[in-house]
Length: 266
Image 1 (cartoon, rainbow, N blue to C red):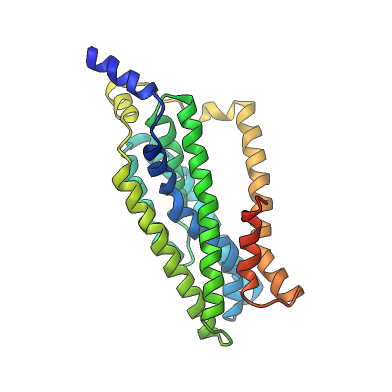
Image 2 (image 1 turned 120 degrees about the vertical axis):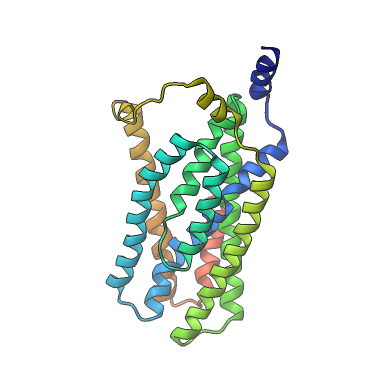
C-alpha cells in the first residue's frame, strides 16, 4: 500500500527537463519527413515528368492511407498499449513510406506520442509542457529540413529528371538520418508509461468511441483542427510552385522561403 501511494505521488510531481526533452524529440522523424512530403512531393513528381493530375493522385493515395491508418492505429494502441513498440514500428514504416510515396506510419507514430502524454504523468502542468516541447521540436524539424534542402539545391546540380531525382533522394536520406537519430534518443531516454500498465492491471472500463461523437466540444475541436491543417497543408504544398513558376526564382528559393516562414512564426 505504501509503495502504491509513493508511486501515485511520483506521478503527480512535475517531470524533469530531461524527461520532457526525451519525449519532445520522439516526433522529429515524423515531423521532418512530413514537412518533406507536403512541401516537395508534388514538385518532385512534376519535375520528373508526371502530370499534375497524376501527381495529385499519388499525394491523395498517401492521405487516404493515412486516414485509414488513423482508425486502426488508435484502436490498437489503446487496446494493447506498449507505446514504445508501436512508436518503433511507426518509425520503420515512416522511413519506408517516404521512399515509396506512401504514408502508412505517420499516424501510428503521431497517435503513439499524443496518447503517451496522459499516461506519462498525472501532473497537468507537465502534460502541457510535454505537448509544448513536442510542438517546439516540430519547428526544429521544419527548419532542419529546409536547411538541408537549401544546401542540397545549391550543391547538387539539376537539369534532367535523373538529376532532380538525385536531389530529392539526398534530401530524403538526410532527413531520415536526422529523424532516426532522435528516434534512438527517444527510445533510450523515455520509459514505458506506468499509468497504462496500471490501468490494464486494475481493469478500468474503456469508454466506447461512440461516446465522443455525442460531445459538442469534440466536433468543435475537430473542425478547428481540420480548417487549420487545410490552410497549412495547401500553402505548404503550393508555395514552391508559386516561387518557381510565378516569381521565376532560383531552385534554392523553394527551401529558403519555407525556412523563413517557420522561423518568423508564420
